Image (cartoon, rainbow, N blue to C red; front, side):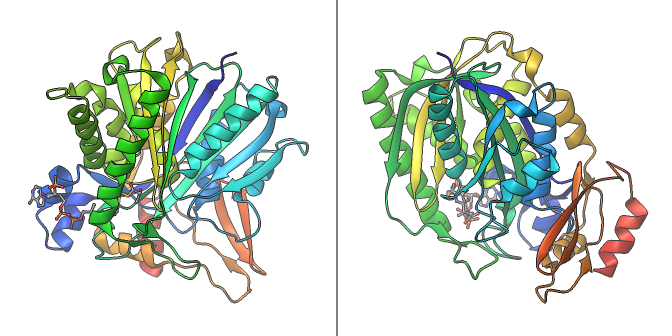
Length: 403
Ligand code: CAA
């Protein structure tokens, strides 16, 4: 029985900061960000968006043409959680009118939680082949103004419908894990920004990759060359390039074909890190930007979550996959984004919802299908966006200045 991805849609903020502007403001050579880290733009969330609105917008698109009643489980992966108790997925479940018979759970293990959701969903579908799972991964990467990780910030969500009728990718059974107790990146409950030992985190990422690859090879008997393409966790695109170089070196391949990874990096280069979603944003980028037909080709996947848990697994691209991509939707979303200047970015960054339990109307900016409209008695309230994709340059400038 095949199990895999029936539908995959992404969402990210309508605002971004060009990293050239950030470099200038921080008095850093822009090439360090564009060449050294391989990043061009950083997606920045406005006050009226959060992990729920991003995931709901992605899910609305992922569910086009799919009977919502067929979704019997929602798994929401995030490390930017909005509540210590209630799963963020319940708000999405409500916004999308999913069935009350559908269960909803939130998952956490840094950036690995999206992959954990995938593995759990695949086992679930094998047990209940008629049922479908909506996997949501949604995150906002925050390190702090002027912090070493600042140029790798970003945000984004993906929504994936997993089922026994895969139309994009079906996953193979061999999958290898690696877990080790390390403090490379973490965020205590009382902190808004991640704590990170940046250079150490890149070292551990590569060590985890080597361990997973060794275990995956032992399980699958496959060589690197049995995989046509690779999707890595992408905290910044240079990290994925380094990862691929490391595997090629381990496998004694001299150099590597750029096309094995380059198409998977295009979206992340323009969004920044989106933690749990980044692996799947890489997959969408690969499938939607590859000029070669990837039907029946094998993709190797590497997921890494600081702390750390990692996984190497593989999937086969389904014939006819091109008919089921959300390419036009993603292209329009990326093209319609508006650039912020550094002062506007810093105001968005500094915005906090009040914590006093009062009623507060959230300032509205251009957003996706859903917005955070109000907080009252500590309860976030969401609404359908009635100003969908409106151009509000003037209003934006006014509201940003008012923050
Ligand atoms: N022109 C071109 N390249 C330049 C340059 C210039 N003027 N100046 C510097 N560079 C290059 C450096 O040579 C370096 O490249 P190499 O690594 O290939 O040598 C690169 O730019 C980065 O520069 P530094 O080594 O000086 O590193 P930094 O101090 O800027 O920090 C970082 C980089 C550690 C990744 C930091 O951005 C960070 O802490 N990021 C957040 C943590 C992170 O993303 N970790 C990744 C692994 S953990 C993970 O994957 C989980 C997750 O999602 C967070």
